[in-house]
Amino acid sequence: MAAAEVGITLFPITLGEVDNNNISRSVTQTMLSDLAALLTFNRLAADRLFFFGAYSPGGQLAEHNFIYEDVANNFFEDAEDNLAGYHQVLDIIQYIGFSGERILVDADNAFLTLATDNLVRRAYQRDADDAFGWKNHDDRSVTDFTNYALLRAYNASNSMLTDIVRGGDFQDVYQFFEALDSTIDASGTEYGRGPSHSVIQDHVAFKITGGPTCPEKEFTPFVGSSGDTSYGSIDESTPSLSSNTLTLTYPYSTPTLTLTLKNPEFGDQDVLSFAKIDRTTRGGDRKIYAANKWGETQRLQLTVSNLLACNVAVADIVTFLNSSLGKEVGLRDWHNRQWRGVIVTPDTEIEQEVTGTRVTITFEGVQV
Amino acid sequence: MIYTELRLPYPNPKVVMILPSPKFKDTRASESKVTIKRTMLGDTWSYVDSSDRTTLKIPLQLTRAKSIELERVLDVYKAAPMRIDLYDGSQWKGQLVGEPVTRTTTGRTGETAYSGGEVVEVTLTFSAIRLN
Image 1: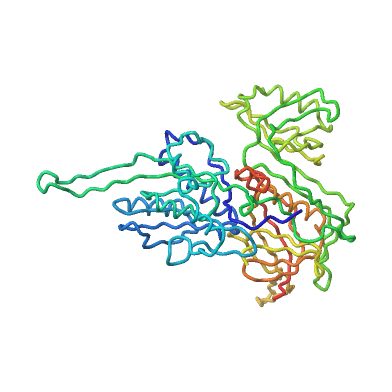
Image 2 (image 1 turned 180 degrees about the vertical axis):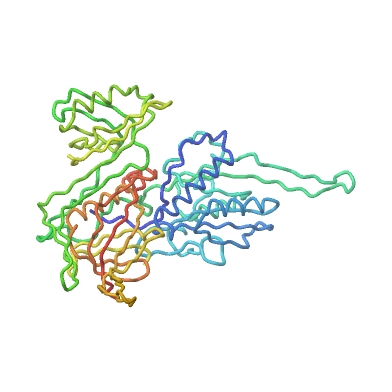
């Protein structure tokens, strides 16, 4: 398996369906929460994600601070505190690659300092209109933010946004304006003018796509040889994961009963158990041994609810469980992987809820 | 070091697996034990079962695809001694204990071949001896 090429990319995050005509602050908070979740997604990513809030009355970024933890709350509160006349910028830049890893922002300059970096230099040289899609800033067609990272800016001028997004090789940039304009005119009649400010909240979503310099991250398994005569070989193939709906069939071969469920709720478990011998010697050494041919079990625990929507009644589940009691069934999971095994909890409670049926199925088997 | 590295088997690794740094609340616990006995006269005796081993619990948040990679590696090297390099530069020689290995899906991420579209949490437990 070829290692992924080093390049700039963003971890894609799923923000779900967003109606651009109805972008609200709550949606934005959700997005930020997603980003915060992304930060904790793994620290490897966190080390390469840079959030900085900056405010500057003069339009130049004067100060920024890195927020690694709780970015959703901290930044949002910080932004609200400084709405009056201050600019707030939240930026997400990630630089991927084990080799040549460099930080895209430094402590003093809010934005990029890697002018010598080819990627960045090329982005500098691109025409902003074409490169960053300003011509399409009224585009209302994007409703699915899947694979889009979010960049959010408060009252950011176009030039500032250009600064922000020039960190990568962007194919599409979509900008959405939310009408947060507010004007305060305190005493216009007496002095003929009054303090005023306006705030525009911008949303920018951009997508970084593959290319010679910015490939998307690929499945890159372990480094090294998969062959070891003492231990056996490791499957190096890219896992085939696609979409499917959780389906149970019985019998496994030539099924006559099919139970098409919804995909399980989060919190589903995949439990791997190995047969091993684990002993501590009199001298205190710990000896662990396992042979390749010794069995291992894999158990899936899946909770499915709200089955009213897919017309699965309690009786259907009971019929399936009773018919397949102790016998081999087929399970095609939500990643379209086929399993064969046994449902080990036929006595599972099937709950009747307002929204339909809810059931937890524990399945032990092997992936085919 | 900003990631966790498993080199296995130890001491002549054939495979190196890169994992993210653990989430907070990773733990290290000595495997030494103390038994306290009180005599009839009130004296206290302590019996020590000393051990240079440490139990490492490493909670990880992975993508679905990465968790599959981990599963494949553990499937083959489930009992192999390995070198474990952690985020703080510490190096350990240890073996996987604390089964079963439970992977829990906790959320969604972008749908790519690399991610598999899901966030998976798993805690690996090692019994290990520090090397450095």
